[in-house]
Length: 142
Image 1 (tube, rainbow, N blue to C red):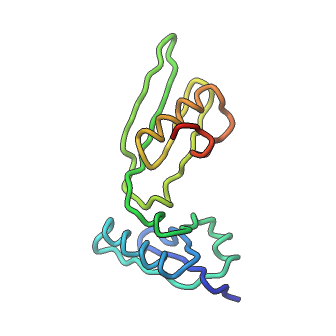
Image 2 (tube, one colour):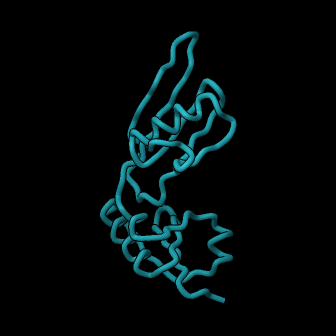
């Protein structure tokens, strides 16, 4: 049984990439993805909640999640008494598809977020607190 308002967004080369609760969000996501990947076949169609769960796709909950952003990564590594920081743009994608999290182990962490400042804040927050995982909302001031 299909539940009204659930949609799955596909890319020819990537397969299912995201889910959406509303058709207009799915349409906006398709338009944004076509901007990022010109010439690639991208479409959406109705989908059941069970199928979305099985596919473990990210859900785009609103139009803000369809904004094109740069996913930033910040890596912090302790080497002897020094702390080395590596910052780079990871990829262009939709805001709702950025994994806003930090992972690694104490003294060697990597964070990803939709801005350089948010990724850096997550990385420094996780530096002493791993192996726990954090969401952006857990870090004050970001």
